Each structure stands twice: as structure tokens, then as C-alpha cells.
Length: 56
Image 1 (cartoon, rainbow, N blue to C red):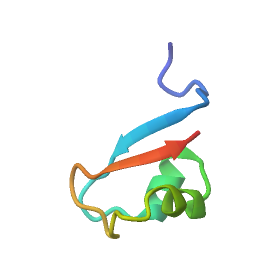
Image 2 (image 1 turned 180 degrees about the vertical axis):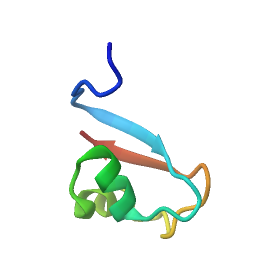
Image 3 (image 1 turned 90 degrees about the vertical axis):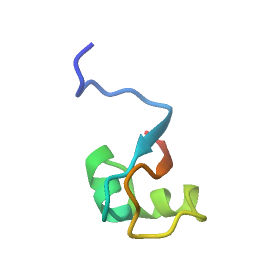
Image 4 (image 1 turned 135 degrees about the vertical axis):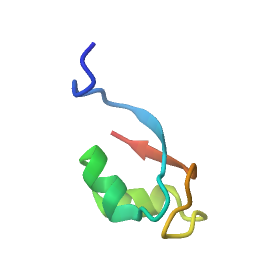
């Protein structure tokens, strides 16, 4: 499977130091509001290794 193939479902991603919801949303092509809604207890900017739940 190629890395860029579309896979839909639940995804856990690991943030890089200083990333915010906009950066994650752009990386995974999901709405920024969804990143924030699914991860309300994780403060922005994210720390290295923060685990974020996404629906792709």
C-alpha cells in the first residue's frame, strides 16, 4: 500500500513540537474544528509525541 492512499477510519497521530490543530488538519486533510473537537483535553500548541485522535 502506498503511503498516500486514502484510508478512512479512526487514526491516532503523534504531534510534533509546536504543531497546532491547523497543522494537523492540513497534514491529514480533515477540518481543524474536528481535530479540536476530538481532542479537547490536549492543549495547543502540542508537545512532541502528543497523541491525537482523528477521523479520516
